[in-house]
Length: 326
Image (cartoon, rainbow, N blue to C red; front, side, top):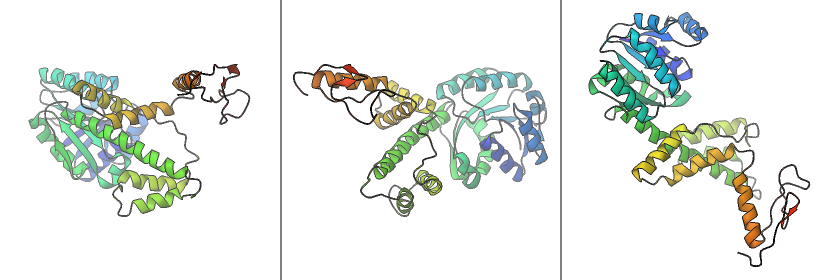
């Protein structure tokens, strides 16, 4: 079977090598030619244009995109289409918004092409254990691509979930769940860290929890690995990246009127970590001072110790004392 890959990040590169080892004919293209040259040294057919990539594949061609979600996917599809023939299949293996996948599928089907949205999970661990794939699209196209999924996936780790968009919808919800799980672990370890009277060894806690407890998981194994290298995570900043799939999950919950309080809270926590300071926090502190005379901390850079509280003063400006405390 012939498969073309566009995008040679860590996941894409490993998928290509795994398929090659199982006897698939794989051709690759990447925006930066250095990565293509590297794969050629490993015996993979390299291409330096999308036209050349398509020429190296037998029909029906399968072109698997492993590129960032958004305009890049549309750009690659637009550049691919002139070189494809009717019946060829484009796979989007990234984290695209499911409504974008529905739109792309409809446009491609009108031209005689097939489009599969296949959400991919497993991260760097997929290299060792296999990936998890969630597919949407025409059953006929899925059947043609299934041999690829079977080789790349963990045992039982792939499935077809319905019409176009279904695969990326399932992956979106998967990522929303991941947000809440990560935030829960983060808060739990912070509670342990702040229990100064016990001086709890965080790495030991993660190790013990991973042996038989009800919260053991791969994410907790990763926590154990990270804490074994840096017991207090002193070398790691607290700003959390990502956010798109979480936003989509929360927005979908609002559209469905399906409550997602845990995922929403985890998403907001990510945004909070990116703020050097919170103006909302300033407003809340000022209002509490106004209605209740509650103490406020000095602004960053002002005289005095930041952690200390100043009764009725913020940044050296006297604030009113409320007549009644609330």
